[in-house]
Image (cartoon, rainbow, N blue to C red; front, side, top):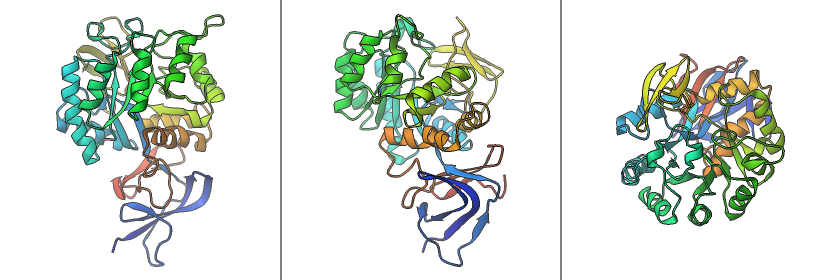
Length: 381
């Protein structure tokens, strides 16, 4: 029989709200509804227990790249983020040659089938050269539905999201194709107008890739994509809450207009996350990380982030002043729902995987559990 463990005394964040002096019961890798009277208890008084974080946009960490690393490299990156509370991660690719991306998708689909990652996100090559950010312009291409389908097929059922500049030729048809195949069509790295963005949403797009970044600014006469993405209830907006990508007022604006059910905190992390400053590669491009900020060596564009979701959580609570329940929605529940895995992760409910994070009163990680096993043991940390 599976051994039951009771986590007792913490503030527990449930879908219904915060429970003071709450209890979470873990049995056999899942959250249970009851425990035997003699089940061992771990006293977590003074701490928070929240669901494990779900990162739907992540390019790597721990010195490893999901786009170009070996299987061991990828697992190193995944483990690095687990140490920071991310118990579920989608592996994101940057722009590359179509054949290369197809081969990588085949490799990573095996890791997804094994449960090491939660699927694959293609960020490029179907993006605008006007808003390319840290993507190699020579490798960009229009989102021809046949090419989009090629990458989705290469992922063998593990493609979760494709970021598109939907104003480009083939963009709207590709959105419809993705929607028909149950893959998230995300609007990003786009130079679209307000009207073009509305058309893409009507066609089936449901996510804004890192809202504000790599798209036209909000204008009073030309509102552009930001206004369309914020106002539409069908769209969830990704936000990189690292203090570099967004001003606090921009984050507050997004939360005010979209509400906590339509925000997903992401890292957009690259190799340096959880690793340190230095020289790195993001796809074929050279990146310099200094003081935790990643920029292209040529041109100086921001090149992803070195963020981990525990830092995004702490900043949201201590700098942005967001309620913990809203942060949990944005960092766990919403991305799990978008990815279609909210039946197993994203909230602390009986029957779901025992994926959880223990935070102290300062919102620093003190424990991480994945499927009932401690990745970071609060009794040791």
